[in-house]
Image 1: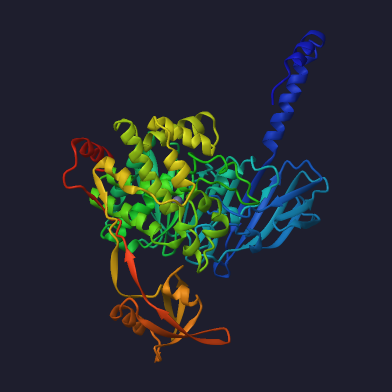
Image 2: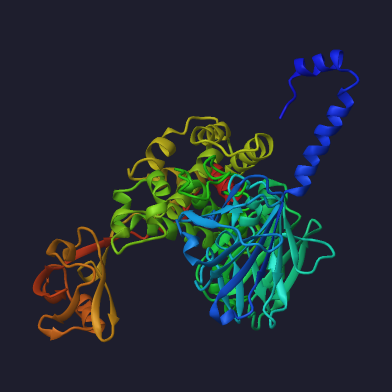
Length: 608
Ligand SMILES: [Zn+2]
């Protein structure tokens, strides 16, 4: 708020003697309000195998007759409406003398409390927490994972209030890990300057082992659940190299400490401003191909601290926690983060050039080999993530794509184009640095679609119509070779016939039955009318099994007529499928035999 200059002048002339008193009063009242309005939580978990957190929330500084307490419907980074309110039970509200206050639900995620003049309100509720996910709370006697958007209510229109959280761990738990700052001289208590930070800071409470290292004097903590045996020093050193490589892209570390919450066994990871919550199979640490995949994955979640958390589309923050926050740019926020996994590890000396090229080729292959790439663009896939990506049907790969895959491919094309057009003086790194500097640091907001494109074109020094108007926004075929040529690379686009007979069905055995899980669009099975969920009882009148189906495929030839006896619901059909030849491209990327001097320079500057 700004004072009106004319008003100040008038006051100065006419009420000179009263002015200091008014100012003192205004300042005093404001600071009183600012100090007195606050929120604190206490979370306990006494019987963890019942899977309930008990939450006690105190809101001090109440000034209105009724208050809406709300729970988010989703959590940033996981673009799917989860309706956490479904897990809430036992809601109670009271004033600070313990008198119960009247309340009612006014929407699926709103508890409206009549304050009855109370200056502070205490609410209590239980949260059922039994989903193993990076985006949902979980509790048993081996782990408490507090996914904050699913546990902490906020006060409507007051996401800006400071918060403290006190954790009362289960008696057998000894370690609390989180990205929040601890409150000094308070046991197990943490501070968040506002609810956006709170919702961005999960807690892992249990008996995890913590390993630490420093980069530029900043502490990084690996909090690892059930770590098992692996070479601690090597794992710490590899993670340190990864961090150094990732932060050198932007050239600034924007956090005071960073925590890796690493839970054992499960799926996925979720990025935060100064932490990540991820699942890992730690038995592969330090040794194998699985570890290489782990390092890529952890580099991905880590680089998100820039790309998406700070370098972000304007739609992704400040968030509306009630509903979908649509953006067409997840192919940049997620896809480029996939692309940077390989560059970060390559620059850290943890992944050599051949592996980087192999991984990029395999990302392109997974995009190109699903029928969805004929139907959905990168922008559409980003926009519709809320209804498609986290809720995939058996038909998903027939009609949709992954913005991770296509975004990674487009990131590579854009990087090669910028490098080429700028005579290897600029790269995608310059785009990321510029977005960070201009939008995150100076304008303190996200960028629009147009601003993103402008930043890329500025780095390239030329218009980028093909990448933006064709490849990002349509399903038109991509000319990979044109871009790879800049660095003396070739991509194998030769169609190769796969041996045997191709039907286009995917199956699994379920209690002794062979069930179709997916039918590829326009495949022989699709044309013949086979469907997902069909149970195959016989193939050519012989009792069906996975083994028989594999044999019919591998020993057969294109043009074979195969009879499938299938049933769905109450109906049994005999369906003749005429197999076809299946052509596949490897999309493998290799260095040309005699690259020019210019191409050699481009390649060496790109991937070492
Ligand atoms: Zn990601």
